[in-house]
Length: 484
Image (cartoon, rainbow, N blue to C red; front, side):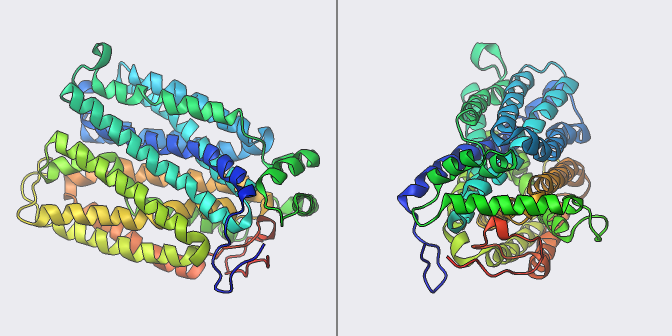
């Protein structure tokens, strides 16, 4: 396979179309991830009214699914090494399907919380398996673009959730008003998720197993068949299988090093890099925009209907800018995009914090006078642009490819679990912080974390562009791509 002197990504060969199709199928798990993350957005106020909740309990009901996600991510990596990738995907689909129905028919807040946790476990599983599977079936030259499909699917899931929320709420005259068959609109917002859950389950039963898992299970010929369907004509599937076999043999010889334990506070340095990447991705506050944007824009002065429309527009922006990352990731590399994103997010979060210093009224009914409302709206959407074109997709790509083979699934599970815990902390803390300090306090805190993420990438994050998975050694320095 040839590559230009400028280092741009090679053109895709027609034989790679199967790899693209398999990556899309696996990335449907990301759609569930995004849908579950944002479906609660339009239901927050209605749930609060229906079950008569205070701000703290509301925040917990919104965020509790993330604890399930953390457990699912932690368990998903381990189950994937035992059962295989597609079987674990199917488990995630089933859990999310059941949770959608349970949440839609919840009769008390504790009942809703239980089903949100069940769905969270399914989403956590999907969040780990998709990037691992995509990384293991993708040709190295296009692994970044295919890995970015996970985030694209997440953004599409967010868009679909916010759009369906807006349709149910507007057609019913409000999220707490009766909709189909007399059920409140907010209940249908959850129930409709059975559709993508079913699609994901069907796809999980149809895609082939990961070559890495097949070789580890002593089924190399099956691995050759899978690789022959996804690699180009200049790539030898048997040679790739031999590379996988060598790394597995090395892993067995270094069995005592197959754990995540290391000298850096009990973990290997590369595992800490993955954990901190995950934490920074959430500590910049992106999910505050998607979980609470409808409530937030009502606070800025929009009515409920307009707030839903603004939230949908924000989600469309998130989808569109993800294509920027997909176009650039295999051309310019991971680090430059992350660094640019950190700087842009810091600036926009700073503008939002400044805008809300001008707010008037109590914390639950603030308004932004003059031009400050539009300034906050523009800054929020530009923040989504910078995140969606950088940290959104690239963290998932890096988590899928940066770890050595012997620890990839487990390390990815640990990093993803930490990401969900960080997501939970940010989500559950926002309502009480908003009540206590107004919006300025949390947005200023997110800006500080965005600034810190720049220096973390600059000092610790490795460049993985063009590096074969079998060559990942777990060092935290930049590597030279394997010649093609």
